[in-house]
Amino acid sequence: MFDYNFHWRPVMKSLPDLIDAAFLTLQVAVLAMIIGIIIGLCLALIRLHLKGPLYWFASSWVEVARNTPALFQLFFFGFGLGAFGLHLSPYLIVLAGLSFNCAGYLAENFRGGFQAIPDTQMRASRTLGMTAWQAYTRVVIPQVFRIVYHPVTNQMVWAVLMSSLGMLVGFRELSGETQFFASRTFRIFEYFAVTAVIYYVIVKLILGAARLLAARLFRY
Amino acid sequence: MEPTLTFFSGFGINDFWFLGEAAMRTMWISILSITLGTLFGVLFGWILYEGKLTAALTVAPVLDVFRSVPLIIQLVLFYNFAPIVGLNLDAFASGVAILTIYAAALVANVARGGIEAVDRSMRRASRSLGMTYWQDLRYVVLPIGGRAVFPAWVGVALGVMKDSALVSVLGYVELLKASQILITRTQEPFLILSIAGAFYFALSFPISRYAASLEKRWAQ
Image (cartoon, rainbow over all chains, first blue to last red; front, side, top):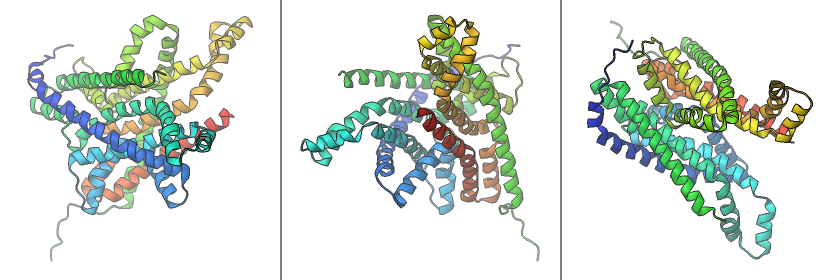
């Protein structure tokens, strides 16, 4: 039954390359999150305050991002845009796909966060003589930040996990690099087992860091 | 004049049926794994709730792994691990197995949340009325807790449906794989990806809308 010989040596030899690729994974995930947060914030504010074409644009973005598979979105940026003669590099495909997806999910989180702050807070701060900008940045945003902190860390984890789809569009981040080595040596199981461990460690590190940061930020 | 040989042919009505059939396969693999995953997930959720310390040391870390490693890595690992232990599974069976465990890991948390959502005094009351432990679970906890976490469960189920697109890496021809096959033949990526995306959207959007409206109605 068990006549398979595990060969870990080739995996160990290419471990430094895998670690490098893991940093690439982290880099693309963090970049996608930053872009996603900025766009998601805009989408959420548009959906809350505006009507007309902009509202429909933001709503369709959010619904498409949330109701189609992330892999489909990556393929769309990869092959779909190719129909218009726009050929992105694998790095840009993954970055664009992830940002699109994260923005859609984060927009809903932000919208929930903004809706959780009662209007009276805004009115009270305006009554105290704050300008709209001051009221927004000093009263509303800090409270929203607390509410959306956990969903955002979760989304960060999802961004790391989703970046593994880069393997299917030829991007050599952690998964793509693993597949590259695995197909050269045919030690598929061993390579992917090590990669799974690396992903697990990355996710745990992110969650741990988020918890530490939360303990410092939300002391009061 | 001799007719020129063409490798590529346009998108026809037959291809539409091909995509439709593939969409049915996506639905079939999703329904199967969501059903099985929910059954196991509820069981795990109950174990997590009841067996505090033992469960935290045994079941919880295992389920955590399935949530912290990208699904695509899990699929490749399992698909290559099964033959090592003498199991000969095809792409469909491997896909169902991993999607089931993945769904179970996500549902377990939802189910535990559902049990925790039922007030302790409510359960004591039902026990004082002479209900057995199982009657209490079936007639008190299930209706109340189930209602509290139903929207979260729908979110998990739709997530698994979308993630079933990843089974295409194992060669199972579901919707996204079918669209890739058609793209290779017709060279019309934009059109075909749009149709595939519309299929996913049509599967996912009405259900998520329905769940959202239910949530709103129950919140009143």
